Length: 184
Image (cartoon, rainbow, N blue to C red; front, side):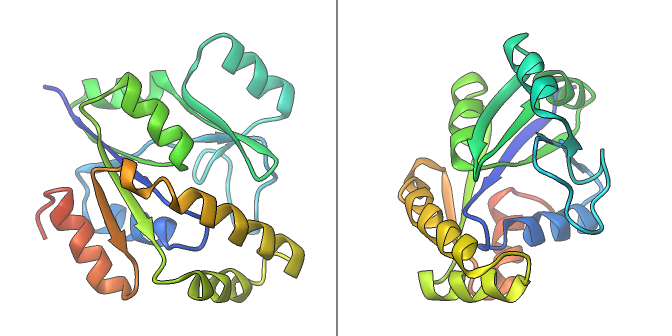
C-alpha cells in the first residue's frame, strides 16, 4: 500500500502551523514528517516533536550526504526534510503532511510530482504584520523582515495546486480538509 504526500506551505504568520496542528488532531490517518532545522527551539518546543534541532555542521553533513528531500536557508537558519522519513511513512501507507516553506515545496514537487501542494495565505499584509506582532516572539525589526520575506513568498502561491486565504480559522480548516479530500 502506498500513502499520499501533502505539502502545506505559506509565509510565517499565515496560520499554516495552526492549521496543520488542527488537521493532525482531527485526522489520525495523517502523519507529520518532522523537519530538521538549525534554529534554536522556541519555548515549549521539543526535539523530535516540532523539529529535529541540529547544529549547523550536522545539518550540512546530512545535506551533503544527500539525506534531505528538500532543504533551504530561511530567516538565517537551515531547514530540511529527511527523504528516508518521508519514504518510510509513504511505504507504510500513511498520509504524510509536510509543513515547509515554498522553496522546499518546489524541491519536493520536483522529486515527488504526485504530491499535493497547498499554499496558505493571510487575508492581507497588514493582518500578517498584526499576527506576527501579536505572537510576542520577535522585536519590531524581525517582524518587518518577516513581513518583507512573506511578501516575497506570497509571490510563489500560484505554484501550489491550491491556495487558501486564512481569514477565518474554522472555515480555512474545513477548506483544507476538503482540498486534501480528508473525511470530516
